[in-house]
Image 1: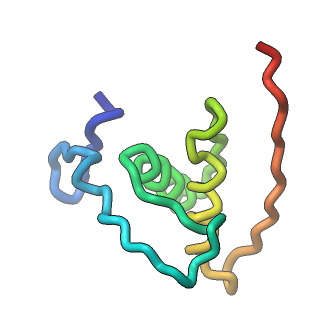
Image 2: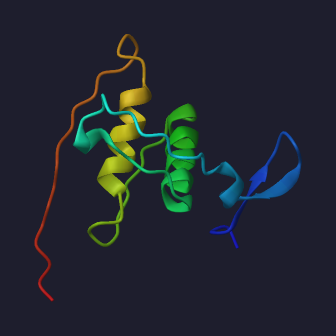
Length: 98
């Protein structure tokens, strides 16, 4: 499924998301809220963000709390050039009524 593989157009083949997960290397200089341990889910989300950014399309991540949506997006935004991008972070946290 697309949750397990992605199509690499340059190599013309399907590649497991597992191969894209880099090994985590701890940086003691990084603040706690800036730490994001890479997983298959965060790599997949980051790939989608990069693709959407390249083709200038908006993205909305939805899902259960605690699934790294905000952390993944903040990590992506930190990698953008501040000379070419202006970031405005607005958090929307709504309590669940279950």
